[in-house]
Amino acid sequence: MSSDYTDAESKVSGNQANIPARIRRKLDIDDGDRLRWTVEDGAVRVEVVQQDAGTFADFDGYDGDAETDGTTAHDAWGVE
Image (tube, rainbow, N blue to C red; front, side, top):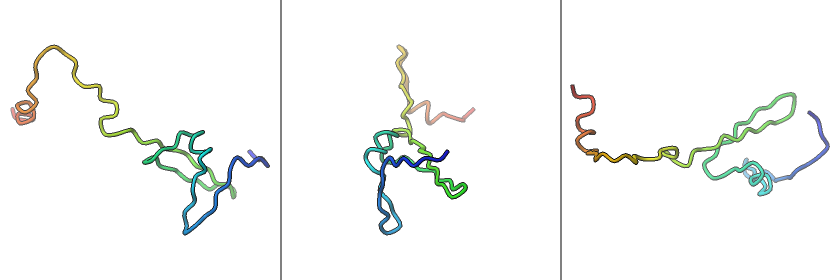
């Protein structure tokens, strides 16, 4: 895919380049996200790998009615 269209520009300084705000917003790039770089036929392709908000980002928690005892369950885990 070839195009003369330029969406945004940034300047390299100290081997680092800023991602223009317009691009960050458009691609929803946030702190902690990673950029995966590929060079092919003289063109650079960048893929955004978004980081989950945290280790338990998808954890909804326990919403059952039974009481739980995390300490006892934790200490007994793996003991038969």
